[in-house]
Image (cartoon, rainbow, N blue to C red; front, side):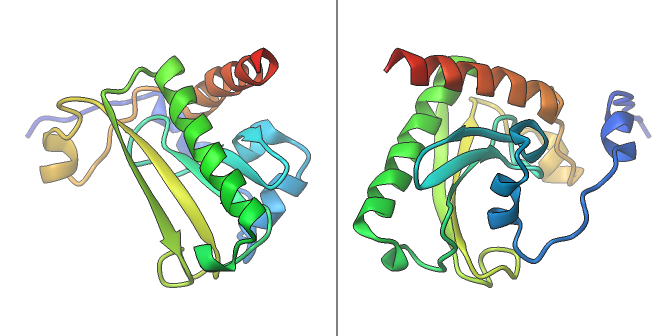
Length: 165
């Protein structure tokens, strides 16, 4: 049997974990440390963060500040803001990671959102050939860059894009 040795993963494995929270999507923005929270961009009504358990590198979550379980529970302003931040996230990922395509979708409600009654959107960058034997046969994903490094690149570009508007 062949063995893979991604030694760089040990830093992630040994990193301290934040305490479990029943309301992470409202607590993370309140931390005051966007790097620790992995928040790459904020608007008035929502924010964009890196997924801590990504499907692919650069996997972003679009989350309204107000916790609701369904898109119909959002105000018209929150709906517009959430769609705008999804579009911003796509542009951001195109600028930094240059994916070939995207999967975009929503988790709505408790069963869809890890037993937390809320909604959030996913922006998953995709590359031709990104689904190789590792996730299919080995049930393992290989991410070529640490989350903190991806955060640094995305946050810097998000700030630049916001200032250019």
